Image (cartoon, rainbow, N blue to C red):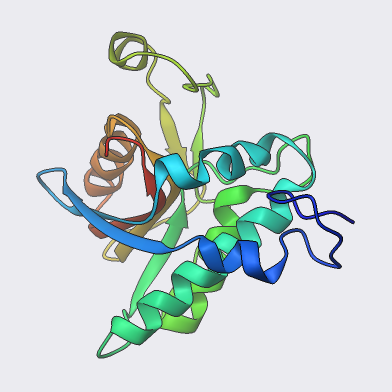
Length: 190
């Protein structure tokens, strides 16, 4: 197998030297009712995030999620003690749910995963679309389980405008949950 970054032979998806060059660059964005914490510089990992459209993407998301979780574990003083919900974590045609992979790693930090909980009725792709398109095409989320009185942390791979996370937070609040924060791998705004 060849490293996706340098092309050198490796037994992994990314060789160790290339993986070490991908650095954690934490950022926080305030969406009003909650904050969104991101881990990676979008320009640095953009091509890796787009791997979610390929089978190899599951391995990439595993590596990025594990590194983000290890970073957060070093900065936390205590476990987070909340439920985690991945945004629209349906299994894709590639055979995996990228946000479920991200969420799975954070079990180590005291987050109880609620897989396949918040799903989109409208699975329109926002990739490369502008704000107006996103506003005119909401996800129309629905819940697969009762989340009343639960403290929730949302998980998504990327934040651009924040509309998806706001829409998810609004529905969860209407159903009696409290969204504490969201974790995303990267923030495309910066």
